[in-house]
Length: 225
Image 1: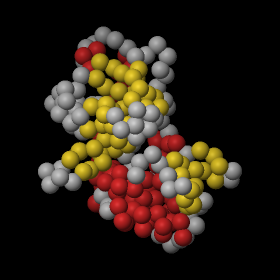
Image 2: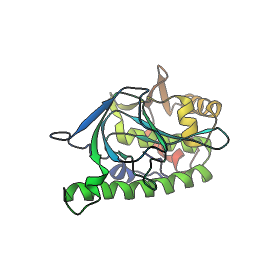
Image 3: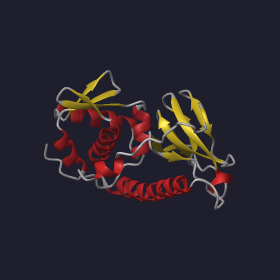
Image 4: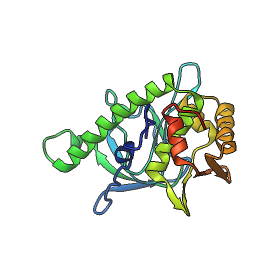
C-alpha cells in the first residue's frame, strides 16, 4: 500500500482491493515480528496478502531506515529486482499469504487469470510508488498524514456508530519512516488533528475519523480546518 499524492473520493474505487481467494491455494502464515524475506534473498516466490499486515523496509547507506510500503489484504509483495528481493518484509500482525512460485509464472502455462491479476498488481505498484515519491517531495506533514489516514480508512476502515475507525498496527516511527517525517512530527500532527476534532485517538493505535470530509480536504491541500 502506498499513499497517493492526490487522494480524492474517487480513489476509494482504486484503493478498495479485493482479497485473494485462499481456497485450494498454497498459503503460509507468519506471526508479528517474523520476516517473510530479506533484502538480497533470491526472489523465487511472489505473495498475495489474504489477511494481516506486512511492512516492507530498506536500510539506506547512512543507516537510516525507510519504510517502502505496508502490505494489506489485496496487495501483492515480492516482485523481484534482478532476481532478488529489494526490501526486507516482516509482519506487523498475524498474516496469511497466498504463495506463488515465480518459476510457474514465467512460462506461458498456468492460470491465465492469475497472470493477469499479478500483472495488474505490478502495474499498481509502479503507479503507487510514483505517486508516493511525489507525495514525499510536495506535501506538508499534515497533508501526508491525512492522506495516509484516508487511504487506510478506505482500505480497512470499520464502522463505529456514525463514524469510521481504523486500527494502526504500525508504530508512530513506522509511519514517520513511511512518510519521510520524524517521529516527533508525526506525533505532533496526530495531536493537531485531534485538537481540531478531525479525528479522535483511542488507545494510541485506534483512530476514529470524526470529520472525513475535512480530513480529505487536508489531504489535497486545503488546511482551513
